[in-house]
Length: 443
Image 1 (cartoon, one colour):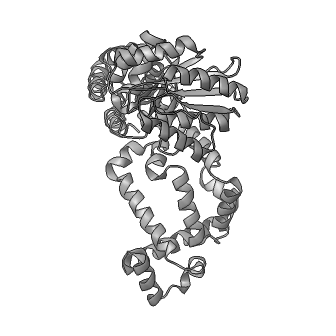
Image 2 (spheres, one colour; image 1 turned 180 degrees about the vertical axis):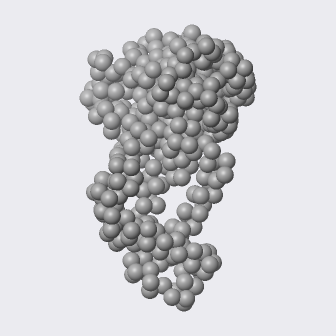
C-alpha cells in the first residue's frame, strides 16, 4: 500500500533527524521534496498545493513543543495535514426505511461488481443486515454471471436478471422483490463504460428517477490517479454521489486517487478494498492511512484484523507452548497459516511502524517466497517428524527435500533455525510472564 510513496517520505523525513532546530530554509527544502513526491504519485495539483501550504503555515515560525523533537513535531504536522486532506472517517447512513437501496456506479474495470458482493458480505457480517444483490449491468452478460456466481459462493440472495432485460425495469422489480422477501438492503450493480458517455449517465438517471435510491456509491480504482477526480466530479454532477469506495488499495497504487478524490469532490470515502478475497473490504480511516503512508504503521488496524481472523484460544495455546518450550514444527505451520489469513508478509509489514526503511533492504515478496518454501518442507514431513524434529536423520532429510522440491541444505537450515528459536524461547520460559514483561520494559 503506497510503498513507493512511503519510502520517499521516509527518506525525506530522515534528513530532519538529530537536528536541534529546524530553520525556514530546512523546511522549504523538505516541502519542495514533498511536493515533488506527491506530484509523481499523481496527486491532483490543487491538492498538492493546498496540502503543502497547510504544512508550511504550521511548520514555519511555529514554536516547537518542549516534549517533541523538531523532526517529531514536523512529522505530526505532516500527518495531520494528510489526514485533513482525506477527511474524517464517516459511516454510510443506514437510517432509512427498509429496504435501503445503494446504487453502485463507476467506470468499467474499477472493480464495481466484485465490490458490490464484498459490500453485501460486509453488511451481512458487520451490520447484521439482510442484503439483496441486483445485477443491473444488462449490457454485459459476463457481469450478470459474475455477480450471480459471487452470490452463490457467499450464500447471498440475488435477483435473476436475464441478458436483454432493461436496467430500469430490473431495478424496479428487484427492489419490490427484495421488499416482499423481507430484505432490508438492496445493492444495485449498474453498468459501467470504458469512459464517460451520455447513454450510461442517462440510464443511471432513469434508475434514480424511477427508484428511491438512498445512496449512489462511486467505485474507483485507487491506481487511477488524479484522473479519478475528474470522473468522480462528472458522476457527482450528474447523479449526486453520496460517497466513494476505493478498490485495489493493496496494489501498487501511487496514492493519487486516495489523496485527491475526497478533497476535490467533498464526498467521504466510506470503504476501501484491500485484497482479492470477499472479506477484503474495510471502512476507510484517513488517520490510519496517513500513518501508514508516513511509515508509522497501523497497530490498531493490525489488532482489529487479528481479532477478526485469528482464533483467540489457538493464539493463547501457541503462546503458552512457546513459553513452556513445547512449540513444534506442527505449531509453526499453523502460525504460517494464520499469517496468510492476515494477508501475508507484505500486508503485515504495512501495519508495522518503520517498515518503509526495511522494504529497501528486504523484499517482502522474497520473504513471502521463503515462508512458502518452509511451509512446503514442513508439509513433506510426517506428523511424528513435525512433533519430534530430532527424529529427522539424513535419510529422512533427503526424502523431505525431494517431496518439497528443495535441497537437503534447505532442510538443515530450517531445522537449525527452529532449534535456535526453541533455545531462545526456553530462556524466556525460565523468566516467566512477569520476568519477560520486565525484560521488555515493564509491558
